[in-house]
Picture (cartoon, rainbow, N blue to C red):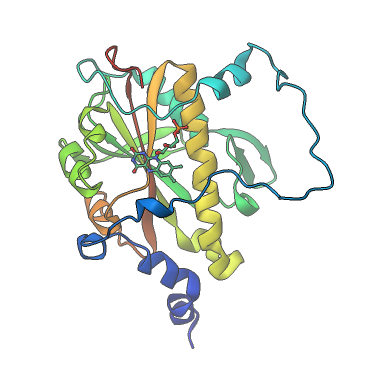
Length: 255
Ligand SMILES: Cc1cc2nc3c(=O)[nH]c(=O)nc-3n(C[C@H](O)[C@H](O)[C@H](O)COP(=O)(O)O)c2cc1C
């Protein structure tokens, strides 16, 4: 079998495709609310339980405060635009370059093998100095490529199962994975790593948003190929994996 066909038939590629949300795959899906698993695990008979000191490592300073305050914030004051400086700071926090060793540029978030298969797109609704539209972030040249003009927040909301937080967010981050950037080394295991990489990136966005007093919310529920169509991805070689909204916290509901 040729390498490309072997990759297509692999379990990771099938996992990625078969776990895509589509309107069909979701229709008729009901939750069994009586069977929600406990979110804390404990062993019934450990050798002992050792109490820990209160976690006061950094006290009220920097990172510790941000970790304590981080929350998914879904209600935004939609009127004013986000400052371009703040958007730049958020982008840098997610994927900015921080060091170079040989040919490898290291970034703010870790990545399996330093391969960085995750790409960042933005659905810009209200950012100072930027037209509404879809942009692609280039961390190396540190710029944005303007790809599509127009307000895509409604289409993106529809694609995200009508989650209206996208309509009022100033900007929505859309993360895709370029599969071949990792699969040449990791084969099908790349499908694990792209999600782990995206998790690190998104947490950086949450913490940077918190530092700037902005509201951030991860969005993992969406019709994959509808989002792929909005940013013109083929859904196989490059496919959307995660999104997050950013907006001004609503004074009525800071959460
Ligand atoms: C992988 C992932 C997917 C998520 N998808 C959504 C989503 O589609 N819509 C949403 O409103 N929140 C989403 N969230 C946010 C979670 O609901 C939130 O993290 C959780 O309720 C815990 O609250 P906290 O983030 O404020 O601690 C997602 C979070 C993660 C980590």
